[in-house]
Length: 140
Image (cartoon, rainbow, N blue to C red; front, side, top):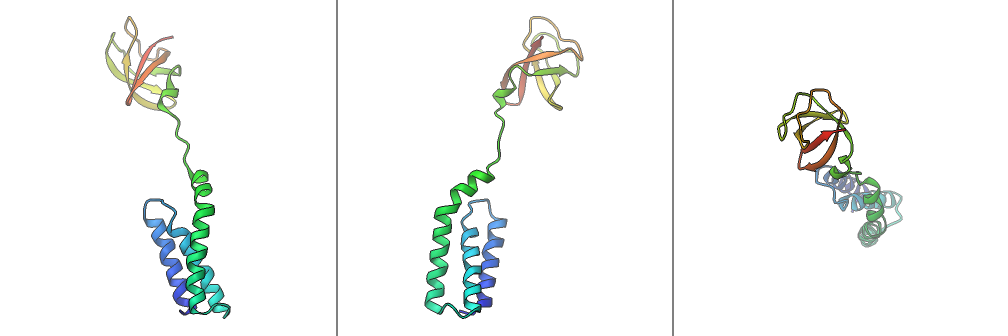
């Protein structure tokens, strides 16, 4: 196959990797096709060797580099349970057991009063527990 066809295949696979949800499979075969294109352009690989190199480089890259690359790209999510004990400030008065809004870490949350009495607007409170997107707060 001509070197320019390998370039098109490689670029097509890299674009496919970008537009599909990340599995990081097409990435390695895209780079493999680009490497084969370079070897074919230099005249170092015949048609059969091109296909073997394409498959071999893709599988080796996939086997050796996919896991470490996925771990490196993995986003670090803060568990919601880590909010327990943080300071939250009600944005409105909350009666006992009442629901309203509270600010926590610069974000507005749905808050529920877990204390024995009412909470005043702006009063410092601690997060008692988290249920879904609702924080249960009680006075400090």
